[in-house]
Length: 118
Image (tube, rainbow, N blue to C red):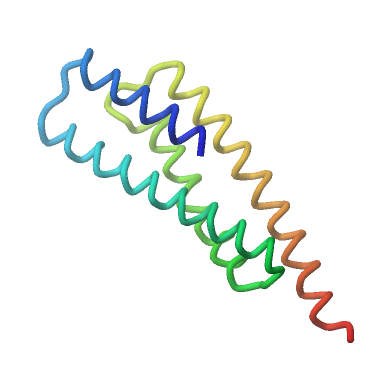
């Protein structure tokens, strides 16, 4: 969630300093809110699935990881103004999402194995 916070702070600074067209600004703010909402839901379901050791929240967590990676790629490449800080935070976010995806698959396999053994 800290990557989302840093990106939000950086975007707020960009909006006040750099010139944006009003339609572009509205679209990017909307995407930023969707990005933050998706990240919050993803982390909540991952935490809930890990604590309860159930498969469904972990599957939702894994499925929501893919849109988050796309949001980081958008933030890194397709945003109107991409600063070096944006690119660095996006690389870090993609790295963490990849690590969380791999660990989520490992946890999901462990949860399914524990369900099979009596």
